[in-house]
Image (cartoon, rainbow, N blue to C red):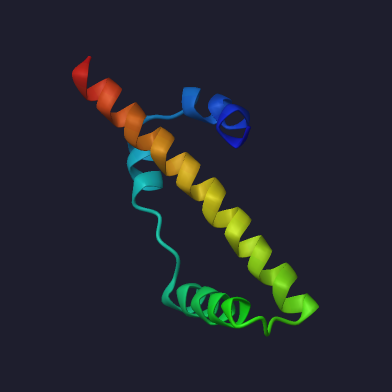
Length: 81
């Protein structure tokens, strides 16, 4: 469903925007926090606030991953044209 919802974004891509999306990376601080929360989650030690924070990160990462996949496909298709 997320893929379908983001399809209009794909149609609006330019080469520069697609490449920028492919290169998006979380900051070291965000990566460290996600790892910390993931470990606590695996150990069953998240508070309700931490669980909400972790779920927000997971949702954001999912959306970014779909956008990056769409951007990579866009670049491949437009390099062939």
